[in-house]
Length: 159
Image: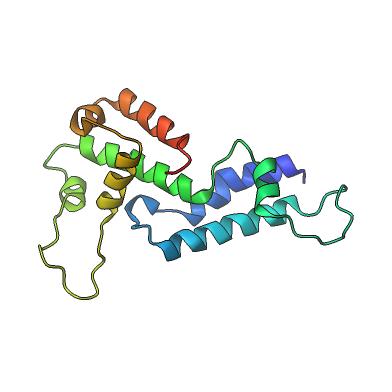
């Protein structure tokens, strides 16, 4: 199988399966680390050693893999993009929708021990602050404008 076919298989099948349901995840550092390790591990298997490598079995560095996959985002940024899309989708739903009611559910003011410090929505709002998005309520309601915002967010490296 060619490298190009393997990469297409990764982007279209493996990555979406690995992050299924990621729209509701709270991204902690441990999850981000695990996702990154998974993504790099798969890409190293796909790329493998090349003819230019003098040492057989030499493992490629992350920078070398970045050069080979210039047009693709890492798996953590993919998760953040999916969450932004889902955020827009749920905010366009009617107030009576069960999905929106659950998504907008506010936890108690004091969270008991063992509860997460942040929610998925909190992470999304932090991501939106990073890309300096203003007038959120107006922009979410316009589906095409929101799609442009999500596409813009895909180009922000620090997101």
